[in-house]
Image (cartoon, rainbow, N blue to C red; front, side):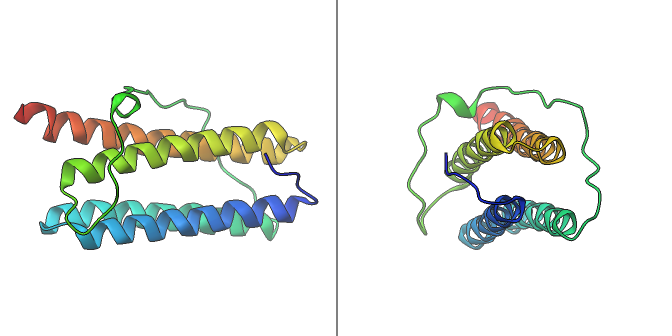
Length: 151
């Protein structure tokens, strides 16, 4: 893990990460061939922008209101192979890719929490880790409902 020189540097990294997540979901939304699929990924993009705005608020001195509730992990995405993103990606492949991305985001924020050296930042990053875990759970439930029920 990278060595941080300041709290602002850590927050800037997290803010950039949320922007990248937003862009990722917007890109996935553009690849979907059904409007409802497009809408699902656009909604996730909006949530990532919400995380970004919260982090920007923290950087400017606002309080973070994180939940202590831990998200359930169905571990469905843990056993699937991530496809390569591409224009021909179907909904199942997009869900798998999204689960993998959310798991990586969870690990990133958990690692940032443990290395931050600041109790407030640790709380913020653990809160973000739980947000990403909730996203993964929602994708796992969607995968279970949409893909597993068809097989």
